[in-house]
Amino acid sequence: MDKNKNRLKYLNLFKIRMPITAVVSIGHRISGLLMVIAIPFVIYAFQLSVSSAAGYESVMAALDYPLAQGVLVLLVWSFLHHFFSGIRILLIDIDVGVSRPVARISAWLVYSLALLITILLLGIMR
Image 1 (cartoon, one colour):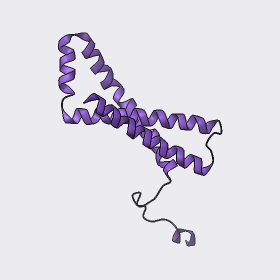
Image 2: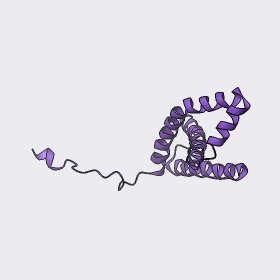
Image 3: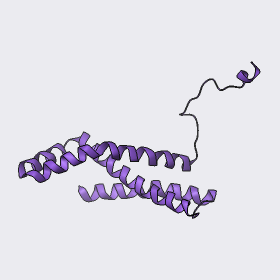
Image 4: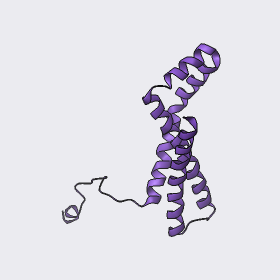
């Protein structure tokens, strides 16, 4: 019974401060999952948009809704985060940037680049 005394009884995940490298790793998995889930919808929208002029207009009309624009921004950010995080992971696999300070910098760089390029693309698309 003594070993149950020290057992964790309540775990609040919002109060745990994970290192940025762990957050980027989790973000890599989540962004990959979001892109996989989006594949059927993107394929359908692409198929509809190239089938006819009316299909193209219906896809463009659907993208005028704020919810659709939010999903599109989320997918663009997901792609960019997954891309840069994947490059970071590949570099770590070949022992580049393995030390803790460099790993932290590269993790912040992943977030910064993904956010910056997403904002730049939004500015260009407006």
